[in-house]
Length: 253
Image 1 (cartoon, rainbow, N blue to C red):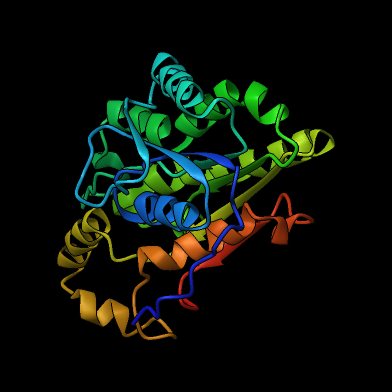
Image 2: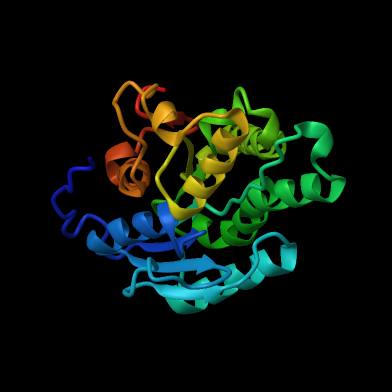
C-alpha cells in the first residue's frame, strides 16, 4: 500500500514544467506532485483523461514525429513563458506472445518512435528554453526490463535501452550548461495501461498477476505516486549534484 506523503509546499514555486505522457498514470502523478510543490505544469498526451491534473495546462499532440514534438513544446512555451523541467514519460507497448519474429517491422519503428525518439525530439525542441533556465533538469522514464526484455516486448525493451544510453550521453553533453539529465527505470507499476499489458503477458505464460507480485521483495506492484516521488526528487534542488544516473524503482525486483 502506498503511504501518501506530506505536501511539498513551495519547493517548486516559479518552476515551469512539461510532462509528456502526462494525461494519466506515472505522468499524471508526477505532474500533480510538482503542482503540489508550486510548479506551473503543462501535461501533454494524445487525449486528456480523468487522471489528468485539473491544475495543469493540457496540450494534445503526438510526440512520435518531429513536427508533433515541436508543436507540443511550442504550446508549452506559450503557456509557461519558459521551461525549467522536462519529464519525458511518453511510452507504449503492444504485446506479441509469438516473440520477436511476430513483431511487424512497422511496429519496431513505431516502438522506437514513441519509446525513444519521442524523448530525443522533445528534448531537442526544448533545449533552447532549458539552456535559458538557471536550474534545468530532465528526467527520462524507461523500464527495468531494458536489461532483459521479455520476448513478447522485445521491441519495447530495446527502445528503452536506447533511451537509457541516450540519457547517459546527453547528461555529459549538457552538464557544462548546468542542465541535469537522469533516468528512472520502473518495474511493474499499477496503471491502467500497465496492468493491461501485464495481464496479456502473464496469460501467455499461464500465470497470474498475483503470482508475479509475490516475487517482488516489497510485496506489491508500484503505485504511480512511487515514481512521482523519485522523479520529483531528481528534478529538485535536493538532487543538484546528480546527473547521468539511472535509478531502478521496482520494489527490489
